[in-house]
Image 1 (cartoon, one colour):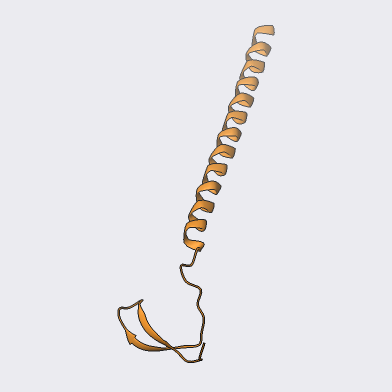
Image 2 (cartoon, helix red, strand yellow; image 1 turned 60 degrees about the vertical axis):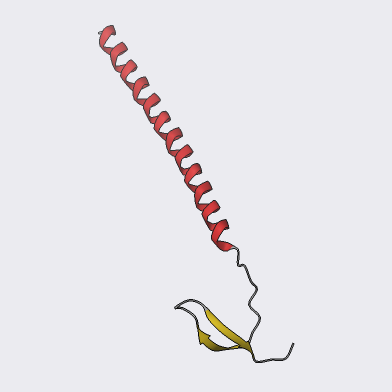
Length: 74
């Protein structure tokens, strides 16, 4: 009977160790994913030019690039 109890206790300890390892692994992966997500956000968050309007579109150079004209004098 003692051998069975010892085996059961050993199994419980092993399962607890595995659970702790999985928790730690998940914590590390979550932290790394959050770090990469923040780095990606920081890369695309910077605007190269501060928009000052109002402006009028004079010519479309491409689907995303336009030649504009100021409507207000500086």
